[in-house]
Length: 384
Ligand SMILES: Cc1cc2nc3c(=O)[nH]c(=O)nc-3n(C[C@H](O)[C@H](O)[C@H](O)COP(=O)(O)OP(=O)(O)OC[C@H]3O[C@@H](n4cnc5c(N)ncnc54)[C@H](O)[C@@H]3O)c2cc1C
Image 1 (cartoon, protein in one colour):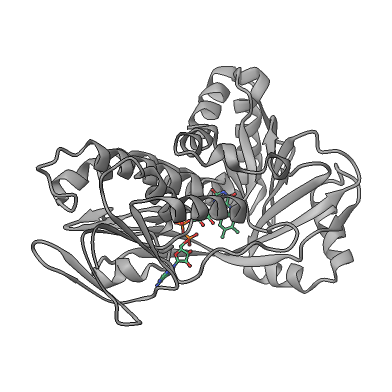
Image 2 (image 1 turned 45 degrees about the vertical axis):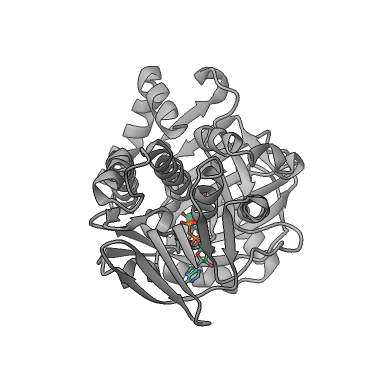
């Protein structure tokens, strides 16, 4: 089979790129090992989608089809330090409708998957697992485990942080494990959350409460691996108590909606985002600590930027031409490097033990809280 673009990985980054290329004349193959499934009840993997990415999903025709009854806006965000520091952000003060949207990963993935399925220029190759990748002057060839051979002018690696495609292309990345796990779970709360997201920088990591519709919340607790293992081993009642206590019982008692799950956290940096006939997007290009909730936001912006570069390409330019693809790399470098550095720095600052560091970081939060101009800048940056 012959394509202009083959995307390996049908996660949110790969799928949103395929859908964003709808109005191009490019023929697209999308290789994915497993079709998305609808979890029973609520998905434990929940994302804070920035307004810029809600706009991007709207522009490509996906946002309006998401079930509004399963999403919640964030109107206020409260950040607490580990020794009395506090920083608040509000959509009202910033003059915007909402600071973010809290959405299930599977809700977006299924919508994008169904859209891609109906799209005339996309061929879904699922289940599809790549086995061999070779590059020649005029095309790349991807051989799947079932023997199918795909030739393409451009290969897009969208197959996550452990990307097979990136490795097969010989791009070496650096991983820095945080020795922390992200523990995620959903709860019903006794008191209303009023669409407020909270984040606590604690001695045992960073805990976030994210509002879901009604009286539901989702949490991400980024915490040392041994503490995460201890949390995951608790009975459902004891786990609810622990999470409610860690959040100062601000929403009263919690009851379980999904069992907790844990994921190892790491920083991953790639030396480049493009090579001849290759582009990396999403977690295949970068992985960051979830404390800023920006992982998939970066992935969506990669997809948006790469689609734009491919759509703007004059007819005589090959879509795998690395000189042209560098426009995509340049468009994304600054934001990726800045967010990786800021989240890594924050994570390290709050992991430093001892009273002087604790006073300093809490002073920093309180100081920022009193500077409306700086706060406004932070809100606008986070919203994209
Ligand atoms: C605990 C935790 C909490 C997080 N919270 C947030 C948050 O609040 N906000 C946020 O923005 N981000 C968050 N993230 C990050 C977010 O999960 C990732 O950034 C996002 O999933 C990356 O999307 P992706 O499409 O690039 O990759 P993935 O989601 O990893 O998708 C890759 C796809 O490729 C497929 N694939 C992989 N290998 C192959 C192969 N060899 N052959 C065929 N198919 C393959 C997979 O099946 C998958 O569908 C969090 C991450 C963690 C661990």
